[in-house]
Image (spheres, rainbow, N blue to C red):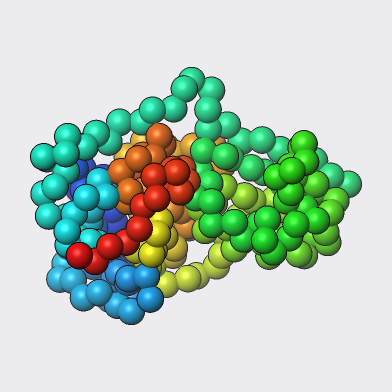
Length: 221
Ligand code: FES
């Protein structure tokens, strides 16, 4: 499909280059771009968004990816990026570590279920189904989802399409913004995900939390 024909906003990861973000042609689903403080960043019909982490004009590309030799290739080992099921009495929690952006809502807000000091680190019987559903929906990367009584809970309903350039990490996408390219890791959400903008993810175009290791920060310099 030609990307000009998309009704809603659309992101095309350019090989070894930035993300091309096109606003939607549908007036009700044009999409917005905002900065870390959630204020809108005006753009026309499209914009090139930095994903090498080196632009001096973040979130926009300034061509720095060329001089830095940025590569958009995935670096996952075979078998990485699998969905793991943690099966409880009523709730099954699905987890794909390759998608995780390390925002940490899970360990901070529901430590009775998500505890990295334990093995396995997920206890699907550690909270009510309602609490786990709410937490999984809040997971911005889509790494976590759950099934309760045979119903899959992964996505929010009807959120406006938005791209948020976060302060120290990835682009947060929500509202079913289409991203071109290959199928992503198992169990990913089509309603929300996080895209790398530090340049270091091993699972590009998705964020895999590597921005933590490299100390990436949104410097508006
Ligand atoms: S922004 Fe998260 S790995 Fe690059």
